[in-house]
Image (cartoon, rainbow, N blue to C red; front, side):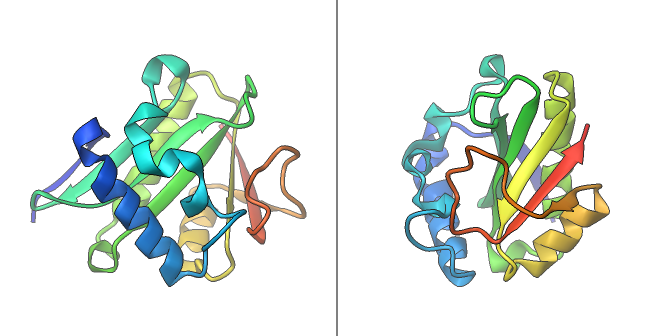
Length: 160
């Protein structure tokens, strides 16, 4: 099995958008207030640029795109970033990809100078929540001010 993780390119936008929407639907993240409905989803490559302290990484298994994850400033904050749109197709789960994507995103965030990383998700994404807890995210009692994901019911923060 050949696993590759690399920054998104424009020719991958459609495949990534389809994965984000399909996995979002699988877990009930449909409609306004959920990541799969964000405007950026249709053209992820046009919204993530390392020089702007953001990156979206795409995971490939045996040459097929199976998911991705990103980091970007949270609500234009200087010190806080957000782990965004970590979505993996069912057949690619259990391979350690979620952990690898998360670690690579957090490494990028640290190098970019962020002091903390926020995320919001859904209770239904219990496997992802366990991953986030394992890498040091702590639960918050409410979302950070400025989140656009009002449909989410789990909020977490990690000090970098």
